[in-house]
Length: 220
Image 1 (cartoon, one colour):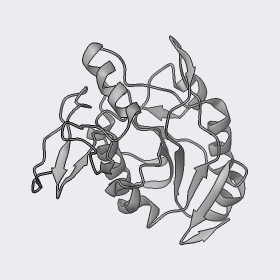
Image 2 (image 1 turned 45 degrees about the vertical axis):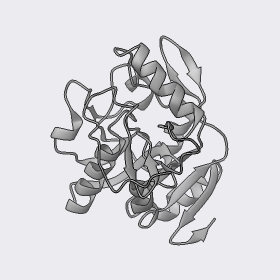
Image 3 (image 1 turned 45 degrees about the horizontal axis):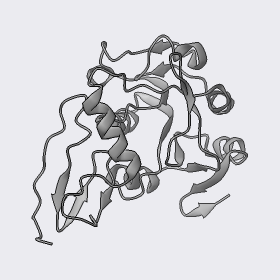
Image 4 (image 1 turned 90 degrees about the vertical axis):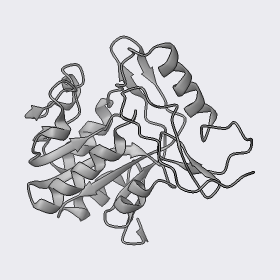
């Protein structure tokens, strides 16, 4: 296979999941994973990502929203209150019940974040932008605590930035996300919850019941 040096293809549109980047023979799927393609026309790291890209092309106006189930939010509230949910909607807030939330129309990326943040970011194509924003706001001191729920994208650079700094819970079971119009569904990938803040022991003891918790190279 011909090796193509780094060429970034922007993913600015809401349904740009089919686009990818190439470097040193590897492809970067729109989900953030780097992978070695098994065939010359490969564009996605897995069947799940390929099917998601197909749905985005076929249904360009479909919502990129899947909401967090109550049992996850119940654990989050044992660690911290939820001041802000910067990537949400009225339906999701029936469970999350944050003091303040931003919808897609209000554009949480363009607004200051504050307090204790719960983040279940949209994945097509904004996950990296939301996590970069989270780190920026936490490092500035405007965000005191945060818990972020993401896919276990272990080859993505944003994943390693989080894992290198913060404790994480690798959830044992697949989380069944929900939407009012579709019921619930389990993703094809496992999920991880990252904790940013001073109450590490509380996070570890609370989320140890949900999966394997790691912190600074230690496993609990």
